[in-house]
Length: 125
Image 1 (cartoon, rainbow, N blue to C red):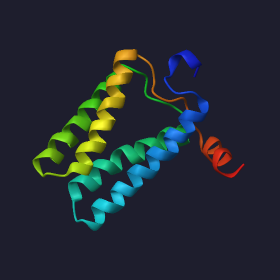
Image 2: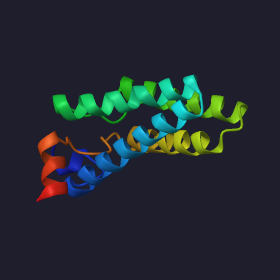
Image 3: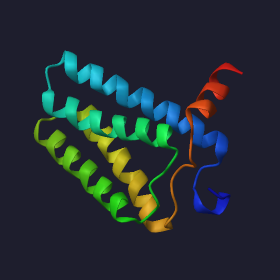
């Protein structure tokens, strides 16, 4: 992806992907141990999607239909989290919404394409 089509640069994109996968994985484990099946599944879906983006080397385009669907997905998680008084999930889903608001307004992907090799290189070299 060219620099003008993304908000983050190469290094920021790799850091973002590592951070996001770590947060999502941690949330999944947290909600498993807290017996919240709905939020376990809710955060497993974006975790799997990000693994798929790394494996298949693609990104959602800013302001695409899937970008809008993802925004509403996180809005739904946020509304559910508010109803059950889960502040952690409310905050995380709000951040997810915010990222997709930015991509819809800018019509740019948030991060560049990140591969497994990019992550491995960043962490171990």
